[in-house]
Length: 404
Image 1 (cartoon, rainbow, N blue to C red):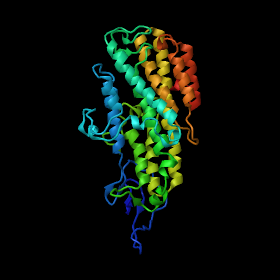
Image 2: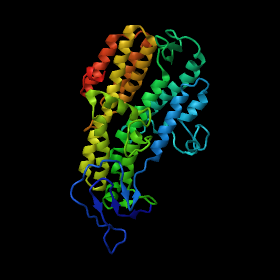
Image 3: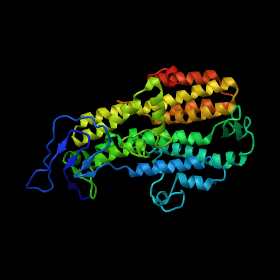
Image 4: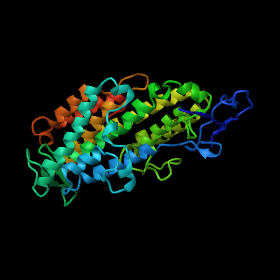
């Protein structure tokens, strides 16, 4: 690949890189001011052009949004749902022409991180197959029972008390659309951010560090490979924002949305700012060739993004327990279905200074098996929900009460 060496300017950061005369046109002498200043926005440019690029992440978020919506439309066929999940370039699977023309798909990036799954294809295939199963069951079991009132062991609808929302569940009370939606927060977004694009194996692959240090950009682009990989991590969280440089956390209904919800909880206030500042400072550190500072931001991101999943898992388990006490089974099903999806996502979290998740896949499988045991949510007990909540909260260093 032909690479080009260019000068760089960082918007909002007090750094400057300037090209100097050299006998070798492919070598850049770098001059920088000492220290890296915290950027106030995610805006970075080189020679007057933005170097930030994460179009692929925006595309996959848009695809996921359409898939999740389609899982709630009972006229959608199994084939249509599967094609949305495993889109093939050029097929008319979505409402937007740009999505149909894209060579990207959701399924290809589920459980596909370098650190967790490059050497664990068995685990990756099992996870992809689980999503396939949820999608198929929604189309072949829940959709045909759309007008049947759900009972223990029988799929159908259940309405919340007082004429509230109608929930469509399988025979165990699980909203499969919620299992898919919340499971993808972990299996797609969290996994790709924490275990792929922020991985040393990806950021420092091959000559990436040397090329970044010398500001050797990708052919035809304004960014170095390392800059781009960092941006792609950023894109899975902020890629659907109207202005990602100044995110407002209303861009999508996935990780972006739930970071905002956790931030609204007084016990976790400020977490959104912590995450954004780490992304922005890490990007500035890459430009400044300060790889220690970059890695410090990765530690912050792993801890705090992982915590979002755990907090919401406990929040919904407790919400389901409280609804169960009132006898409102539809509300119980909805709360526990969201909790189920977030619990499933725990296996994609990442301990800050380790190569492992906070909760292993075997533990996640044990949790979900407990929830689905027998007739599932129809007969789950408060004791089970409390024990699960305590285990998760303790593992992540917060209290169950804090997540309410």
